[in-house]
Length: 121
Image (cartoon, rainbow, N blue to C red; front, side, top):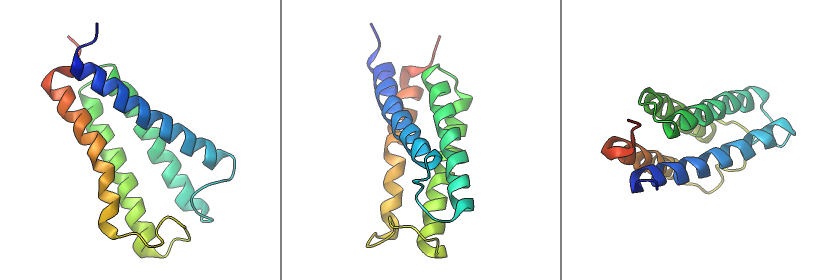
């Protein structure tokens, strides 16, 4: 049976991986967040990094926490780029700039669970 911390990591990382895979599918089928191809490419690379790092976190790789945070931090930075940089996207309409920080909640829970006993071995 899985320990609670491992179960938390597995469920939350699974949800994030599923979400980012669907976003990559949208990018691949031409339904990206923006009409700006460079912005969509950066988003795609960051989402691949998130998927890979979350997979490694589930497998118990401590270094993957760093790559998860770098990838997610980069993704949040691109949201601020779109919000303040005039990138043609719809998701910035009516959003408060601090709303993008909610993307830090699940990674924080995953990191806490990992450090409190979710490590392999």
